[in-house]
Structure formats: C-alpha cells, structure tokens
Image (tube, rainbow, N blue to C red):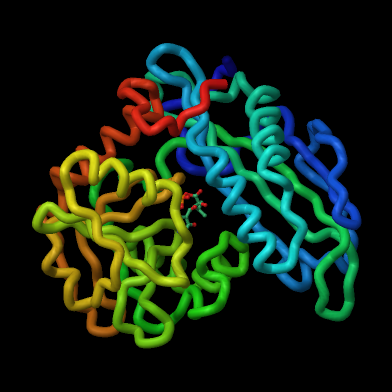
Length: 338
Ligand code: PLP
Ligand code: COI
C-alpha cells in the first residue's frame, strides 16, 4: 500500500499510476489499453470540446473490515452511462466492457485503495468523450472511454455532519425534457454559477427547484435530495433528476428498516415540515442538511437540530457504509468482491 496520509484525504484529484483507455471507431470498440499518462492529445474540433459530447460516472471501491476489496453496484453505473451516452447520440461502451475497464483500473492501482481504518475509499471516474472532429453540430464517429481512479475522503469537509445549504431561486440546473436525468458535463456547467454563489456565501451547495414552475425541490448540485418525516422517506420524482444509485439503495434500506418510501413532488413549503433532510450520492454518501437559506428572501429553514445528524439519516448512513465496508451483511447483493 502506498504511503499516503489516508485520513487527511478530501474529495480531490489524486494522481495514481495508471488509467485505462478504450477507443471506439464507427461503432466498434477496441481493446483496453493501460496508460501511465494523465494526458491525451485531442483533435481541436472534437465534439466533446465544442458540442458537449461528454458523459461520466462515479462509483466507489472499499477495502473492508476483512481486508477484502468491494466494488459497489458497478453494473448500475455501466447502465446509466449507456443511457446517458445514447441520449446525446454517443456510442456507449457495453456494460461488460465498462465493468472490465473499471476492474482493470482498480487492479492496476490497488496500492491506492485506502485502508479500512481510514474511512477513505477509492473513487472511480469513468469518462466517455466524442473525439472525432465535426464543425457542424453532429455526433462524433469516434469515442474515447477512460477510467481513472483517485483515493478520496469526504466530499464535504463536514463529513457526516449537517451542512448549510442555499435554495436556488434564480438559476436552473436542468429543464424538463432536457438532460437532467443523465450524467453529462453540461448539467454541472449549468449548475456551476449557483454552486459558486453558494460557496461564496458559506454554503456547501445549492438546492435547485424545478425549472418549469419553480415550486418543487429538484435535486442538489452533486447529489439527490431526500426528506424524512412520520416514518417516511420522501424523495423528489421528476424527469430532470439524475437517478442516483445511492438514493435507490437508500430507498431499499429505508423500506428494510420499516420506513415508508414516497417518490413524489416536494413543494418548497413542505421543507419546514421534515424531521430530517439530506443529500445523497456516491461522493457525498449521505450529507445531512441542517439548514436551507432561501436565496430570494434570505430566510432560513432549520431542520431538526442543525448541529447533529438525525436518527434515521444516521441509521441509513451506518447501514450503507456497513455494507460497503463489509461490516454488515450484503443482503441485496450490491457488492462485488474484487
Ligand atoms: N445527482 C447528481 C447531479 C449527481 O452528480 C450525483 C452523483 O453522481 C447524484 C445525484 C448521485 O448519484 P449516485 O448516487 O449514483 O452517485
Ligand atoms: C458522484 O457522486 O459520483 C458525483 O459525480 C458527484 C460529483 C463529484 C459530480
């Protein structure tokens, strides 16, 4: 294992030894290549640079309590990349190729998988880009699929402590019938202005509203949104929201713990009625939300005790992390041992 100060890691890019690359031309995928370079040459007219033909994924690999290495629900990310790519007319790597490339990237960098005790993990970032030249707006005929890894600590410096957030009243992240439901870089570009506004004001992230009516909670910049009240786990349902693997897993765990699960619209006025709210995603796991400041009125909604994570969020967090680190039974078969 590399000599790294694992406990000090935050969620940032950390150079590892190798990455995996695979090229597709005219619909045919080639072999997996190993590269020790962090760079690649690119055509100046490539479609990823001009017309946003770029999709990515994020998943994690954990060194467990028993020393075994577990990869969490990789097939789901493979399927989502396929959905994302096809929606913006890109060639997607087949699920089998995606999974094989992820495993290779992990294997070649296994010394970077953080030790169990550190609480850190190995983040895997698969990326698909159009590299063929086009001047008129049209899909590329050539694609590059890259998988790199990075050991990471918590996404928010608070770790599993409630964060302060901002309700975005002006900017939209995704439009109905747009690209909110897929993982394309453009969505993050659309959210960047709001995210930076939030950061400058001392908030961890913005929470977006539905773009059409500006009445309902959509999702957070880098994560899905959930609220809990009356023994019910509630999460927004909309065509603009990225189907989160973490959220899907939490819904299963919530039901397994005896909570009811509702997927429905959440009007802004309902926020103050929740006993707990949070953001969830691969990078963030669960990030409890302690307060939401309305960017239009400056009024703040405080949820539960804004200094400690709520009871259910804590239970869900512990159960999910327990499964990922091999401390709890993997009842739903989510891990693959590498
Ligand atoms: N929503 C957005 C916009 C995201 O970027 C992410 C992160 O991937 C999520 C939700 C959470 O998805 P997942 O749990 O699959 O990581
Ligand atoms: C993830 O949770 O994997 C994400 O993609 C969130 C963010 C880093 C974009």
